[in-house]
Amino acid sequence: MSAHGYRRYVALGDSQTEGVGDGDDLTGLRGWADRLAEHLARTDPGVRYANLAVRGRLAGAVRAEQLPAALALRPDLATVVAGVNDLLRPGFDADETAGHLEAVFAALTGQGVHVATLTFPDVGRITPLARPLAPRVHALNDRIREAARRHGVTVAETAHHEVVTDPRMWSADRLHASPLGHARIAEAVADALSLPGSGDGWARPLPPRPAPTRLRAAAGELAWAGSFLGPWLARRVRGRSSGDGRAAKRPELLPVVPAGRSAVHDGLPGS
Image 1 (spheres, rainbow, N blue to C red):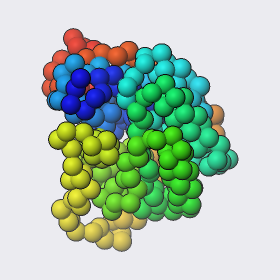
Image 2: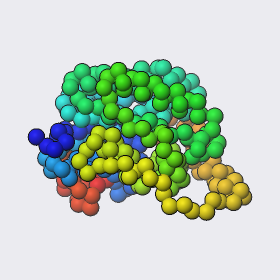
Image 3: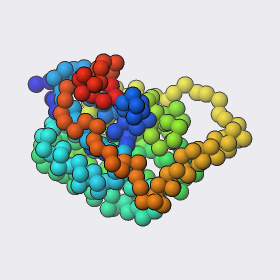
Image 4: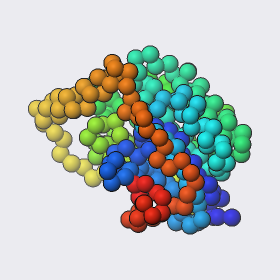
C-alpha cells in the first residue's frame, strides 16, 4: 500500500485536464493532471495513470464518452473537471451541467473511487470582456459543491484565491492555464487530497508587478479579441469544436514518467 493509498489514477475532463496551455501539440502536453500523477509517483513509483480528457468536451460528453472508459479502468482515484465549455455556450443551464457532473461523481464513488474536483475562478477577473459570465461561474461552483457534498467528493477550492486570476497563471488565450497555472492547480488538488509533500503554498500571491496603463490594457483586449475570441466565436457559429476528431491522449493506465524523460519510450505524452 502506498503512503497516499492511490495506485490507479484516472483523469476525466476537457482541455484543462488534457493539458492545453502547458506544452503544445508538437512537443506534447503536460498539464495539471500529469503533474498530479507525478506528485503521486514521487511517493509510489508503482502508480499508474490514465488521462481521458479531450479539449472542447461538454459535461454531458464527459459523462457519455469518458465515464464508461474510466469505470472500466477501475481506478482508486479520479479527478473530474468540466463545465467551463458549457457555461461559455449561449444556452447554458447550470442545473443540467451540474447534473451531468453529479452523475459522474455518483458512478465513480459508487464503485469505491475517491473523486476530486475543483471550483472555477471568475473569468471576468481574467478577461474584462467576460464579466457577464460571472453569475454563471458562481452558479456552477455552488452546484459543484453541493453535488460533491452529496457524494463525498474532495473539492479543491481554487475559486476563492486571488492568485488564480493573476494573468501570469493564464496562457495568451486567457481560457487555459499557463505552465505556472497548471503547476498551481496540481498543487491545489494535491493539497485538497492531503497528499504527502503537499501544502497550501499554491495559494500564495505571485510577486507584484506594475499594472499596465489604460492604453496598454485596451490594446491587449483588442489583440486578444482578434486573436482568440474571434476564432472561438467562428467555431461556435459553424458548430465546430477544438476537440473534433481528437481522442484521449492517454487512454490506458501506464507508469508515470518524471518530467524530462522520454515520453515516447515510456508512453506519457507531454512529460
